Amino acid sequence: MPTLLVVDDERNVLYALEKGLRADGLRIVTAQTGKAGINLVQCEKPDAVLLDVRLPDLSGLDVLKELRQIDPKLPVIVMTTHGTAETAIEAMQRGAFDYLLKPWDLDELTDLVNKALKAGRLSHVRALIDPASDCDDRVDRVIGRSPAMQSVFKEIGRIAAQNVSVLILGESGTGKELVARAIYDHSRRSDQPFLAINCAAIPETLLESELFGHEKGAFTGAERVRIGKFEQAHRGTLFLDEISDAAAATQAKILRVLQDGKFERVGGNGTIQVDVRIIAATSKNLDQAMQQKQFRPDLYFRLNTFTLMLPPLRERADDIPLLADYFLQQYRRELTVDVRGISSEALEVLGRHNWPGNVRELESAVKFALVHSTGDVVTPLALPTSVRGQPDGVSAVPSEVEHGDLADVRHLVRTLLSKGKVNLSETVHAAADRVLLEQVLASVGGHQARAAEILGLSRNTLRARLQQLGLTVGKVVQDDHDGSP
Image (cartoon, rainbow, N blue to C red; front, side):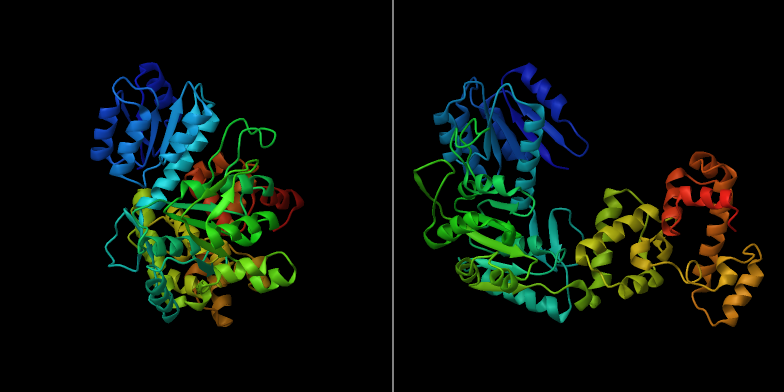
């Protein structure tokens, strides 16, 4: 559970912040003096800090300096009632994550705190390369024993300690950010911040400001000086995900930082010097992007000092059981479900899937299965339909199954046996479930709460089974009105 420390001497402010920011999965601790805040950082090790500038015993800026000495990677948001450009710039120069003026806008404050908590986690939670199987919530793992992933691990070992840019290529969902963090964690900059930004997730008009910051009045809405990610990551590492989506002008400024470590804020004239290691990634074909003049060749050659190519999951199928078990152990505690493993039949289904969404899709599938499992082992029926497909005999079986008298289970089994079908248990159960759910829902006019009561199921379980069978309430009711079998 992430922890946020709030340091402010006004009780009403502490109360308002605790009430406004309280959310599931967030722990908030408070201090009313600078010294108390410093002590709490040492003993509580928070993930982010909200720090007032005016405190009864110390200046907030002096407290910030102390906190940076204790933990250079700790994101600290400075708050002040008497905001001046000088205070803001000094706070950022001392290593503040950002600053905020009182009275704050709750939405802006919440967004800023969430960004700081994420940045704190990225910097502090280590990304380890296939460690021992014992689970540890304090680390993330790059899992893989396949030859393709062993090659990736060797490359990480070669380049992590070198103070050079790295380009990570791979399809969406292959784990590029996790690999970037593994490089950072094994680098000489691991005691400094790690910041990540997805260039594809931010509008083109805002990305340049997000990366390089802006001066007050640089454009409409620029009401104060903003420090960008490059300044925040000074002496640390900046991960630029989907760099190919950056506009040409932004690419040119990134190239200059790579060349001499210099840039100007948007709307500013002063040159800023930074020392930042850049790790970039993209899922796009950069050769094609350069041919179409969507990506600068000179930026590509600067980034291409070291290149890592991550294999898609379909090319490392041997890792699927390892990854599936890792995600199961990770989420069974988070979801508090009593599921201890994955059946061999479910693993076979996972192994047959093509995984267009790669590891991210597998993670989502395992989480889905944990929510929808009815026993202590994940079975094929608990997996998403998109992964397992329609069971043999539900939508693609002969007309005897789709349109015949499905109430005659013996007839159904004999029909399937005569046609040499396999996986009969799954087929028959799915076919029976299909008829049962269709008939009950039709009898109550599609009222799910009433249908769940008749079936003796929870509404969540009913919805899950409908999804597994590819049924919708509207279609079931319409078919019944049309007289469909």
